[in-house]
Amino acid sequence: MKIYQRHAWNLTIEEAIKIQEQLQKEVITVDQLQEPLKYVAGVDMGLEADGTISRAAVAILSFPDLQLQQASIARRPTSFPYIPGFLSFREIPAVLEALEKIKFTPDLILCDGQGIAHPRKFGIACHLGVLVDIPTIGVAKSLLVGKHQDLAETRGSWQPLIYKGEIVGAALRTRSGVKPVYVSSGHRISLTTAIDCVLRCTTKYRLPETTRIADKLASQK
Image 1 (cartoon, rainbow, N blue to C red):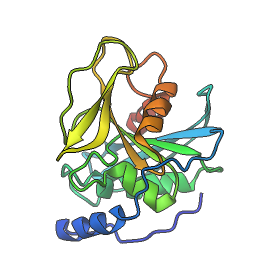
Image 2: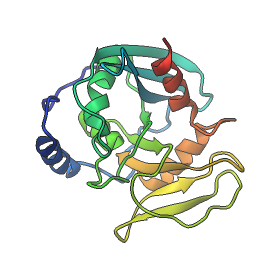
Image 3: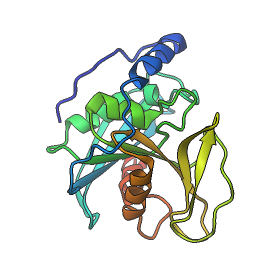
């Protein structure tokens, strides 16, 4: 993939907020997917050398059979501190380098993090989606903003995630009796389609195969 950098990454918090507010205006939360989906990707990041090196992984899977087709890893110095709400500035630089190494463009990317379920409606899935102009979904393991009602225990059950009176995502049960994940639109996809895609990418584990495989690649030594 060819990546076009749209802004610097060595930023102050104030500069990062301005970029989030500017790029958020470009986020699209209606379906603009290439149908049928042929390839889905997962991205995740780990840390090496006591957190000084970011290790990003991209896993490309065929869809709907979810077989690994290609993987890439990129390492670069960690240039932004860990601050909730600013995960993308810490992780995306290495993710973009990993994406540059893949041979073909995925139809959909699932991110380990938030989409619009974010204080400024611009989590890592939104940021990455806008930069690469590919449909993206945020699939987070923990809640950042919002509240939801209790879910049924069965796989596929979900409840809307409400933040400041608006639906920004969903708490989704991907396995019966297991803690939910938090799904939100990143870019060029609606919430209902995002939920469906996450379920179709999830097999016997809590996390979708896309991000589960990317997580293993990112955390391997």
